[in-house]
Image (cartoon, rainbow, N blue to C red; front, side):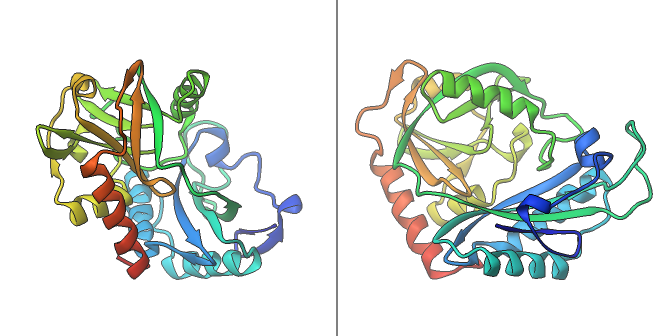
Length: 273
C-alpha cells in the first residue's frame, strides 16, 4: 500500500507525519472521504470544494486543488482495487504544543483503503448526546471526530451500524458519518444544514435527484416515520430497517427503493455530478 504524504508517494509502513502536527495534538485539520471505483473517484470536484470550505472555516490556507488531484490520481494508480475509500487529510502542520498554530506548511495526506458494498438496509440507534448547531465547527468536516467514535461504538454495541443525533433544540440532525432522510405522510424530508448537520455530498445529490425537501424535524419523527434512509459517501442511499427497538418492516420501502435506484443510475452515468 502506498500513501501520499506531503509531496510524494511512500510505502504505508514508512509513512510519517510529526507527532507535533497540529492535526494530531489538537485535531486541527479537515478531511474528505470519497468513493473510488476501479481507480476513479466519485464527485471529486464537490469534495475538493467542501475541503476548501472546511479549511477556511478553521482558518487554514486553501488547499491546492491541483496538488490534491495529483495526489489522488497517484494513490489510485498505485493501489488498484475495485472499491475503495479514498481519504484526503489536510492539517495545520507542525505547530507548538497548545492551540496556537505554527507557521509551518499544512500537512497533506492521501490514502486509500479497500471497501465493500454496503447492505441494502441497516439498523441505527439514537444517542443522548447532541450536535451543537451553533458550534464554531458546525458544518465543517474536521478531524475532531472523537464524539463520533464514542457514538459509533455505542451503536456497534447495540447491533447497529450508525448512531443518530439531535441538535441542542431537539431537532433531528445527522449520524456520526451520514445524513438522514425520512418519509412522513408521503413526503421525503431531510434536516436543513442550519440544523448543524454536515452538508453531505451524497445528501446534496439525493436532494437534487429525488426532490426531497429540507425541513426542521423533531427528533421523535424517527418514532413515526414511514421510511428512513441514510446517505453517505460509502453508503450511497441505505435503508433503515430498525431504529432503537422500532422495526420498519419491508425496508427498503417504495420511496427509499426509488431513491436507491435513481442514485445508483445517476452516479454511474456521471463521475463528476
